[in-house]
Length: 234
Ligand SMILES: *Cc1c(COP(=O)(O)O)cnc(C)c1O
Figure 1 (cartoon, rainbow, N blue to C red):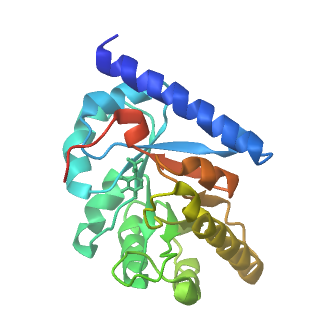
Figure 2: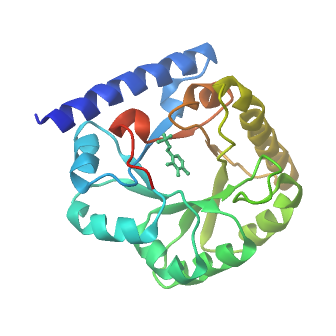
C-alpha cells in the first residue's frame, strides 16, 4: 500500500470510530449514518483509495472539477453527490455527471434539473439546501420560505425530495453549531407533518463538527479534511 492509501484508510478508520461513538451517545444505530467523502481538490487516486477502503458515497462541489476526474473513475460503483452551488447553465452536465444534487436552493434550479433529468427517463434524488443563519450572503433557502420551494419540487415528476442539507457558519467552538443542526432537524419534522411525506435524509456535519451533527440526527455527514488531510488554499 502506498503512503497515501495507508493514511486515507487509517483516517477512515478513525472517522468511522467517531461516527459510531457519536451515534451510540444519541442511542442511534451507526448504520443510519452515511459517510459522504468530500473529494474536492483531491486527485482521482485519492478517491480510488477511499473507495478501496470501503467508501461508496462521494461529494464534489464543482461540476468542472468532477468532469475532469470522473473519466478516471468510471469503473467505481458509487453514489456521486453534488454538494456545492449549481449554476443553471451547468445543470445539463451536472445531471449527467452526478447521481444526485444535495444543494438545491431555488425553484428555478429545481425546475431546470427536472427538465434535463426527463431526457434520460431518470429521477434525481435531491436535498434542499437551507440557510440556517440569517447572513444574507450565504447560499441556501431561508427556513421562512422553504414551503415555496418544497411545493414546487413536490410537483416536479423527476425530482425525488429526500430531505434537507445545511452548511452552518464556522465557529471557534464546534458546540456552538448545535442549535443550527437541531433547527434543521426540526424544520424537516415540520415539513414531514405539513406534507405527510417521508423526508429521511439530513445532510449536516463536516470534519470539525460531524459528531454534534450525528447527535442531532444527521443521516449524511460530509467529510473531507479528516479523511484526506488539509486542502491547498483556494
Ligand atoms: C468542503 C465541503 C465539506 C467538507 O469540509 P471538511 O471541513 O473538509 O470536512 C462539506 N460540505 C461542503 C458543502 C463542502 O463544500
